[in-house]
Image 1 (spheres, rainbow, N blue to C red):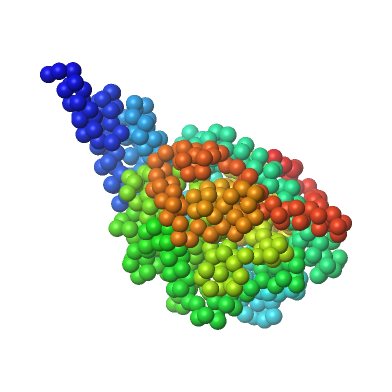
Image 2 (tube, one colour):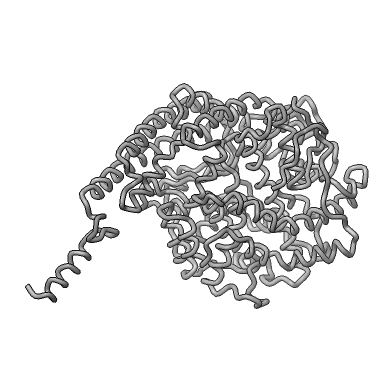
Length: 630
C-alpha cells in the first residue's frame, strides 16, 4: 500500500472515531472503560434527580407533613447512592485521567455536599432545612387594622400593604410581624443547619460551607472579584440611595426619615428592601412624564396568567428556540391553589425526563409578574437546551449564568420597543425625560438589589466561617445590611430576634451570590445578543442598550442556544468568551446601560444639595461586632 493510501486510510479511521477521541492515549482501553462507566452512572444519576425533583415538587405544591417526610426519604436514600458513587470514582482515580472530559465528570461527581454526612446527620440537616421552608410557606400575620385577624400571608396580603400603604406605623407593623413569625422561631433550626453544613464541608475537604459554595465558580479568585465588582458599583448606588432618601424625607418628614443615615426598610415597598420600585410614585425624576400603566393596559386587554406565559413562550420561539412542551401546560402550578398550602416563591423545575419542565408560582396579572414569568421561562429554556447533556452536565457552568438567562430576555421584553410591538404602549422610542424615568425605574430593582444580594451571602460566609459569634448572629446581619446598603430595620432588634430566615433563600439553603453575579452577567449577555441582533452599536443614540429588543432575531437565538446547550460541560470562562468575547465578570455593560441615569443623579443630587452616604445603624445594640468592609 502506497504512502498516499495509508494517509487516506488513517484519515478515514480518524473521522470514524467517536467525537473527542484521537489516535493517542485517549483511545486507550482505560479511557473507553471510563467513558462507559460514566455513561451508565449518568443514567442512574438522571433517574435519581428525577425522583428527587418529583418529590420536591410534590412538597412545594402541597405543603404537608407527609409530603415533607416523603421528600426527605428520597433525598436520604439517594444521598447514600451518591456517596457510594463518589467513593468509587475516587478509588478508581478517574480524576487523574488523561481525558479532560472524564476528569471534569469525576471532579463534579466527587463533590458530595451534604451527602457526605452519615445517615443520621443527613436526615437531621434535611429536617432543619425543610422545617424552615415549611414555616416560611405557612407563616401568617395579624392585620394592622383588625388584630384579631391573623390569617394574612406574605403574598398577596402583606406585599399589597407594603406596596400601597404610606402609613409608617402600619408598614413597621407588617415588617415586624413577618420577621417575628417567619424568622425568630427558626433560630434553632438555622443553628442546626450551620452546625451540620460545617461538618459536611469538612468531610468534603473544605474549611467551611462558604468555601464549598465558592468552589462552584471554579475560580480561586472569584470571591475577590465579587468584592472588587461591588466596589465598582457602590458610587452609583450611593447616588441612588441619597436621592431616594431625600425624596422619602420630603414625603414623610424629618421625624420619619432623617436627612442622613440609614433608610428604614419598611418604607421601601419590599419586605427585604431588595427592590424599591413599588414606591416609584414618590421618586419619579420627571413626574410630568407619567409612566404608562402596563398593568391597567393588560387588564383592559383582558390579559390572563395563561397569556403571560404564552407571550414568554412566543419570545423564545421567535429566536428559533424550543416551544414549551405540552407537559409544561398540563403539570405546572401557575396560580395559587385554593385547597392547599404551596410555596409561592417562583421557581422553575427540571425533572430530567422526557422534556418534563414546569414552573411553580402564584402568578398575578401585573408588570412585576410579566417580568418574573420571563425570568422563570429563561430557566426552563436553559433546561431544554442542555437536555442532551449527561446528567452531571445538566446545569450552568457558573451559578450566576442560570439566573442571568431569564433576566437577559426580560431586558428586551421590558424595553419600550418591545412593549410597543406587543401593543402594551403606544410609543416605542422614549424622549430624554421619559428615558431617565424608565432607567430610574429599572435601577430601583437592578441597582438597588446589588448591596442586598452581596450582603446575604457575605453574612452567611461570616457565619459559616465562624467569623461571627453565634451571640451576634442577628445584630451582625443588620450591621452588614447597614454597612453595605444603608438600610436598617424600622424597630430595634436584639438577639432575642432572629431575622435572616425571614428570607426564603436562607431557609431553603440556596447560595445567593449567584443573583449578584447574575445582575452583572445579564448585561454582558444582553450586550452580546444586541450586537448579534443588530440592535446595538456603541455611541449610536438610536441603537442603545436600554432600548434593544432581540425579539425575532434568529442570529441572537442561535448564539444563545449554542451558549445554553453546553450546560456545565466546560468552564464558564470558555463558554463566556465564545458567547461575549469576554472572560471575566465585568460590570462595564451594566454601567453603560445606566450611564445616562448616573450622570443625571450626580447633577440632580448636586443641585439639591443631597447628602450622600450613611453611618452605622442605631437599631441594633451598640456593642455588636466590628465592621465587615471588603
